[in-house]
Image (cartoon, rainbow, N blue to C red; front, side, top):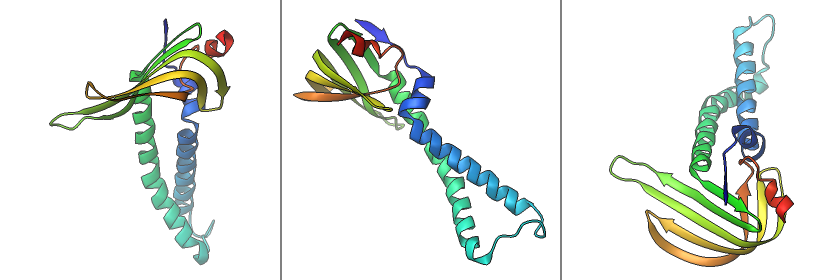
Length: 169
């Protein structure tokens, strides 16, 4: 089996596109509002009816950009540490679902998907939806919590060479 590497460009254009658009929305809004507030009052003035909206948007921009950035970085770290391997008609995906690192001990939950035979692959902007015979294991801190068979798994569009999965089908 060949291990696929994480690709930051694919991550930003595919899986994290909504986070990237949100970041741009908040940056543009923040810059626009700062420019409006910096310009002299005789050049441009905000009507009284819109002042509450402008102030609300400024507060959302100041709070929203860091929150979206933290979520995007967290998702990226989980995907970088996950492992995806493919070969002809087989797929192994060791996905880190959740990682909490407090000072007294951490929690790490992994979902391990083993696809024995790929029936079909549906491509969306964010995911590759793989259907077939799939066994799923949920592991929490090294202990097996659950093992079951499922029919579909969604793999984030963030790995280099994942298109070969479709070609091998």
